[in-house]
Image 1 (cartoon, helix red, strand yellow):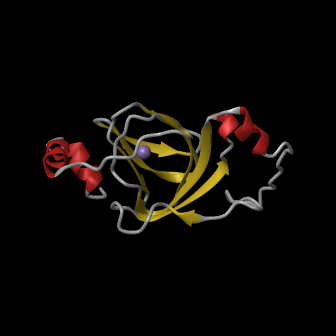
Image 2 (cartoon, protein in one colour; image 1 turned 60 degrees about the vertical axis):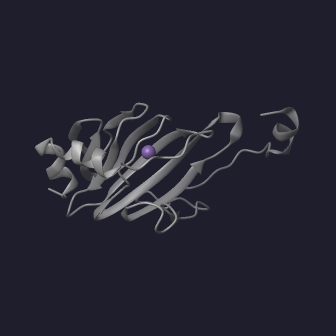
Length: 159
Ligand code: MN
């Protein structure tokens, strides 16, 4: 970031009051991704902090019961804190149950997906570099290789 960019950014603090249940005044709800760009179900995105002077963004995603994020991988890293509800995640070749306040980091090029429980939402904070590469989706061969692990196959089938 150069000095002129820095000069254009707001110098004032922002205060955004929580309105309860992981919602905040002045923070808009967005589509998770562009519809049709990748497989996902029942998930929304909110950007909580996105100041280039921090070099990172803090987002809040919320997956409705039975929904899931895209199965993807990329060079950039995620730092995730579960803030609400419960579910399961796949990171690399590990499937783990996750619940409120659990922490998950996703290293470069690890396949990852978050799935909400059938009867609970799964809301999580996700910290990410502002400058990041585009997520890559699995090829048929990569998906078949992942499915060779029965725990991963059950996870992908929503079990
Ligand atoms: Mn990702």
